[in-house]
Length: 186
Image 1: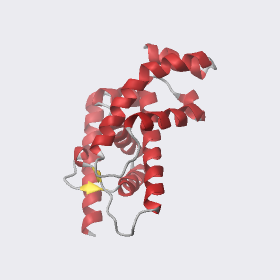
Image 2: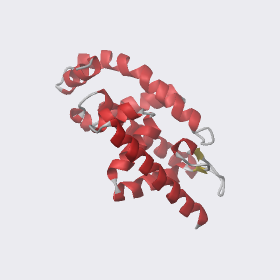
Image 3: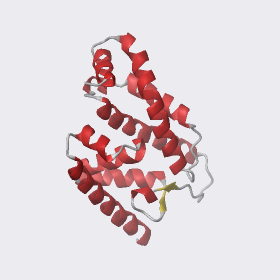
Image 4: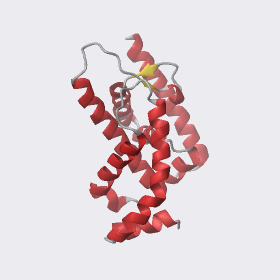
């Protein structure tokens, strides 16, 4: 059992002193992942810098009642991915409310297997639709896109083998490609 897992369990059991060393262990990793997310989202009017996104994520996670469900570091990263998605979508909604009508704000999705860009709402809608069809695939996309998790990390987080995760990741990318093609053609 890794140090992060031990600290997560201590914190879940009510040991508030475990939060500080836990934060130190995972903060830099989350900041690096947030930096990658923000750089991939260069077309998106994100006003949060990576450290701010991580801080917002930590606030959301430490206030969350779901912290009692965290099994290990990989599961924590999966929950952090969902929190980052929610923070960015909420921020985008807030910013969009003040934008001029017709202004295009985009999010690059080429690393998901797309050659085009998509706005954050469209990606969020795609993930919601995919979750209705296959929540496992939607969770993989969320963890891969918003937390930048590797195949090995995804396998740990989901309890599946790496070959299974690779196969599911390919299936998710194919589904997303079709979804975005239909949205842009229709």
